[in-house]
Image (cartoon, rainbow, N blue to C red; front, side):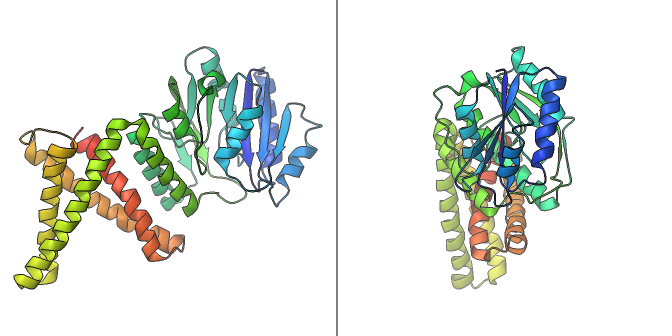
Length: 353
């Protein structure tokens, strides 16, 4: 068996027949000896039953029924566990990914040009159609945070293929619906990205949720030990940040209560002092840079990232509170977590690179 394609499903009754038929045609037209494995999380809409009914028509089709909604990543791993192909592929069931790219991705691995091929939305030629602004912001933010771990342009893609041999003895245990980043971090693969046009689902509802955002942040933290230098730098960055908060509050109190300055003016001065403190300490302590090296240029960069992070914090707070209807204090906690990593990544890869 050359190729096994894994397609996790949950409530995809309107798409399942079409995706199976399109993959079957792609295999036949390109003479790919392969199988399609549907992994269904006990869909209430009967997706799994529809897939079962199609097994007589499509001999290459296999269906796994799970007890409940256990998540996309675990579904992919379960599909991997029974797959017979030398190459393993993953794609969504909602017709967002271009099926006609399967043979190209498969050929790149077969010819030895890559161990892992990613269908990328974020390289030249790739694009996204039909997404709302808030979904674009969330996707770009998640992709930006992943820069800490990989140079791949689209490590959050749900469309990829990998040589089975790359996964031998690898302990994959991601939570949520993004598994590719974990595969990249935990395997030593030669990566190749091809451009794809991602089309927003025609039928059904997106599986993206705040719960998935929380899982993603937890995954990022768990990956840090694989990047020891980044883990140490992030820890130091957090310590400096906490010290900056204390300094900000101290000077706000000092200027307002002791010096009698109007509190909003005090807040500006306190922010600038804390900003200068954080810049100096991160420069010499976190990123170990010479103090005089491009001092003012890098201070402006550091300040720009701080202001950008503030703007992102406000945008995320609005999106989570107004669009996802989350209590504003919980939204702020989630936003702070995301913005902290954005702030760190921005300074690591721009200010102090």
